Length: 125
Image 1 (cartoon, rainbow, N blue to C red):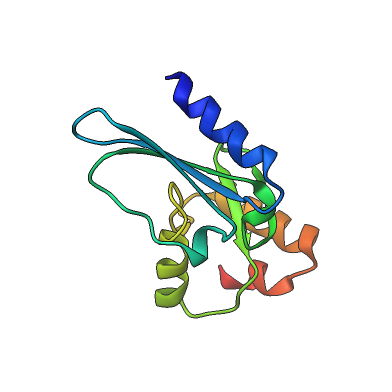
Image 2: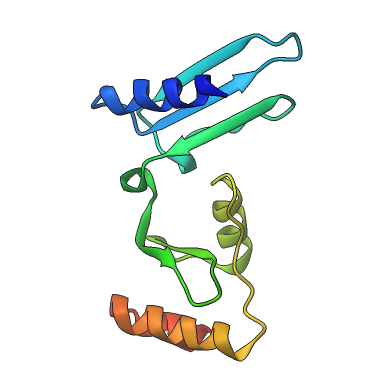
């Protein structure tokens, strides 16, 4: 799908753009939408084949990266309760609130807390 690359490049060429969405409607029509607002400030629409591109700078995070389990983790720049955190994470396509169940995941939480200077992260466990 070459239109995906074209949409992504259109966003990259515009200094105001931090999000691009490329979609194909049920009739096969292509659309490319650009936005200056990050994922927590936009509404994701479903129902069509849509791809979202977010520049890392648009993600409201104090830390992110691929961890030992091969997943990309994002530590939000907010301090909220469990329910609000789950809602916040769901606003970013492809992300969900992490629920740590294994010892390797606990180790990652501790490492994130130490790396960001956020002792609270390691105390959540």
